[in-house]
Image (cartoon, rainbow, N blue to C red):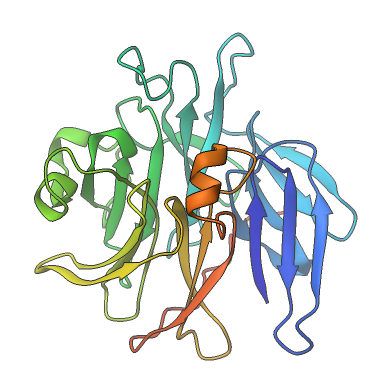
Length: 285
């Protein structure tokens, strides 16, 4: 089954491979990301925090975490992934003054463990957390603060002493070097294939990159939209790259005229398959 969300439309989608049927369930808040739980449920990163969401009923049950929303600020949880040990990691988005010179880091990256204990994962605040994903052995976490245009790699092999220090992360990709200084685009959502290489969407840049953490760009896929958002390797053999994109709720009319497929879900066959998505380990969920 393929699952994805329309964040601004507040909708959760499920598409079944067998009969190609698609179910859409409204959500009461924006869902930035989610991890899979048993019984068809997911652990969702919402505007106000983490919650268990049951698509069959639309019911959400809050989960304690290290994130506390300040209603006076335009903060919400955003991109996230489940690590190889079943803990869900998600970072936030500060919508206040976004895309302006006044845009400030104001929200962190958080992790929810099996006893629903929330903890702060990184030692700094960010503007827009994205590209969270993990190497096949779970020893490396990839991450970006999108406006930085840099993709970082963290040593994730020992996380007993938190928070992890951003200053100790390695830069493994820089869009100024890949696409050129002054080019459009920021790193958005990402996933890792079985070979340990990274697929990452370049929002505003209209491409999806396939990156080797050690050797740089392996492939550039030109998209029929300006704002691709998140790739995932799925399908019966995990060899189809599905890519979401931003649509009419956000894109201006002139962009929709130039890119009429904006908001679409795209699929591309690839040679290197993905990995099964880890299940979130959450007691009593």
